[in-house]
Length: 580
Ligand SMILES: Cc1cc2nc3c(=O)[nH]c(=O)nc-3n(C[C@H](O)[C@H](O)[C@H](O)COP(=O)(O)OP(=O)(O)OC[C@H]3O[C@@H](n4cnc5c(N)ncnc54)[C@H](O)[C@@H]3O)c2cc1C
Image (cartoon, rainbow, N blue to C red; front, side, top):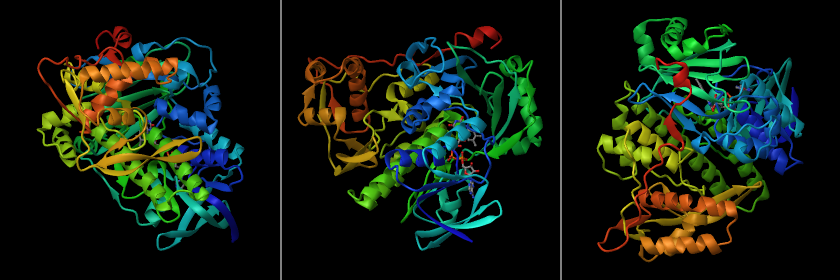
């Protein structure tokens, strides 16, 4: 048996494994990093539609240009048929759908920082794995990790079967990026929970020569998510000729129909006029695949000398197209955590639990936001009750209806992030979504309030972190019942000012001065008014700021979600398929 030693050994060469390796090698060039990948690339893999967060990580890895050169369609948003009506509506990544034509290959700058890719995973995963190799990682394909040897919570070695050769591999850190297989997760006895009542199955195939539903600028398009009532269809162009078309249905429904997967798939596609139109000259590649897509979450993501990253750590239903975002983000966090462990300046147990707790919370938010989404799709109505439980967990006593409204409009400040977001959506976009589902205006909670004051009752002091340029830097934050108030940026600005009660007018005056004289760039000055409103709304929703309304004082102006900016009724596909 061959024996080898590395600084970091990674199981799995999907997006998570390549991200860990590329970022480690970028910031720690002399590190000995190895990836063992069971398959020989290229190989097909489901999960093609990305979110813009991924683009930023690809850029940091130094691989965005290579992905762009492959010419994948640019995802500028998604078209949905969902919720209470049969009408199509668009979700735009760029406000007002203002994507302008630019020659390709482009650069990661300007509008492209707000777009994503729709990737053919056979090509994409290979580009990333080759990049990891090019950065100096040792990459073995057709190399299956067959066992994980450990003493208690400490991994001692991996056994790898590479073609005819068996290897024993030792490393200082081990990372499980083996996706759904969860090789290390299982070996280390890490339990998983399934915090949802959603149990769906996916059936999909690849098609040649399907039409794109819409072409926007050079290479831009939107993916289609089309509810059928009992389930939904995804339609994701992966290039000029190849398209991924999939069906998601509840497992119970699938069982009750007694249909075979191919029958159910064919019937679903045949029943949808848009899919019918787009595939009328197309042929399937006859690669029909099925999988169950239960959301799940591992109970911990780190141990003495190991980490779980990517889908081995958890999975959220694909409705939000967030799987790869979570995989790349989690993998980046693991790379940064290992870098800091090696530097030895920060407390190792804080670093590990920061990743484990923080990333678990992020996956959980996505699972719950996906649940919320399904709540709006007919058959899944029992999930309304579920959102009530979620609200209960953070101490809010609500009816089911109130709870799902709160969930769609709620603010969640992540421990580390400096912007308000809900499962990766900016707060205004989340409110916009809720507003479209409800078919009514969603007001900001701060509207009409006159007085605002910081509320730190029962909060405790702890640490948050800035994660950039290969470093994790700590900053102070307050925590209370799972919510966090980071003492940086706009949050710290509000916390300082609202230590004593202020009127709406005083806050607006202070904001104007801060904007003019706070050393902001022109771009920051433009973004500041919206960011300030969203931050204050989030602080109020999360209970960090309490408000009241006093007569004769100027109230905070009514601030209604701009329903047209990020989400609006579809204006192009609906015209092509006029019966929709
Ligand atoms: C039906 C469905 C639809 C989805 N749609 C989307 C979507 O639209 N957008 C999105 O962002 N995400 C989507 N996802 C999720 C996405 O597929 C995953 O989030 C993503 O692939 C996770 O990347 P990863 O690197 O963690 O795992 P993977 O991509 O699965 O990579 C894991 C790798 O580990 C290797 N491996 C496994 N066992 C071993 C072993 N013993 N030894 C060595 N190597 C091993 C595997 O061969 C594989 O290459 C979807 C998922 C499903 C199920």
